[in-house]
Amino acid sequence: MRPGLLFLFLILVLVGTSRTQEHVPKESHNINWSKFSGFWYILAIATDAKGFLPGKDKRKLGASMVRIPKAGQLKVVIAFSRSQGCQSHTVTLRKDNKKAVFRNALRGVKGFRVLSTDYSSAVVYVRLGRAGREYKNLLLFSRQITSSFLSIRDFVDAAEGLALLEHAAILPKDASCANTVLP
Ligand SMILES: *[C@@H]1O[C@H](CO)[C@@H](O)[C@H](O)[C@H]1NC(C)=O
Image 1 (cartoon, helix red, strand yellow):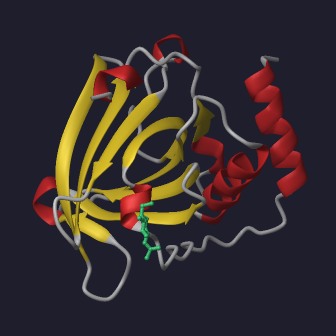
Image 2: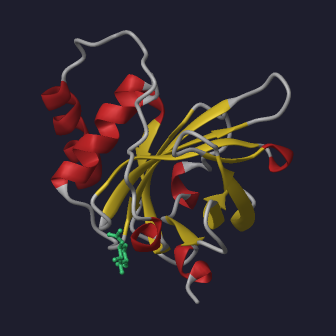
C-alpha cells in the first residue's frame, strides 16, 4: 500500500463508521474572507460526479485562487487535472443574503461554502449542477503542498457526513497543474 493510502485507511479506522445517516455539515460563520483569499492547493477531493476524477495515473494536485472583487463576491479560479488534461475555470460567486454560502446559478454553482478553516487549510463544500442534476464535491484546501493530520481528519469527517467517503481520493503530490494558477 502506498503511504497516502495507508494514511487514509488509518484515519478511516480512527473515525469509525458508526454514523450512517447523511447530514449536510453547517458552513463556518465569521470567516474573514480577506484572510481566506489567495492561493490554495487542493490536496484531496470527494465527489459523486462520476468520471470527474481521471484515472490514477493522471491525478495531480488541484489548485484554487480566491479573490474578493467586492464585498459579498468571490472570484474563484479552480484548476484540476482531468482525463483531458489540466483544466481551469473562473467563476464569480455571490453571497447568499443570510448564509455564508456563495453561488452562481447561471454557471451551475449551486453552493460554495467553507465548512472549516484555520486559514492554512480548509474544507470546502461545492454543490454543482443545473436543473435536476446535482453533484456534491468536497475539497481539502491547503496553503502548503502537505496536509496536517487534523485537516485530513476534518475532511474525512465531512466526507462521511455527506456520504462521500467511498468517493474520496488523496491526490498525488504533482503540482504541475496547480502551478498554472499561480500569479
Ligand atoms: C481580516 O484579515 C485581514 C488580513 O489578514 C486583517 O487585516 C483584518 O484585520 C481581519 N479582519 C478582522 C475583522 O479580523
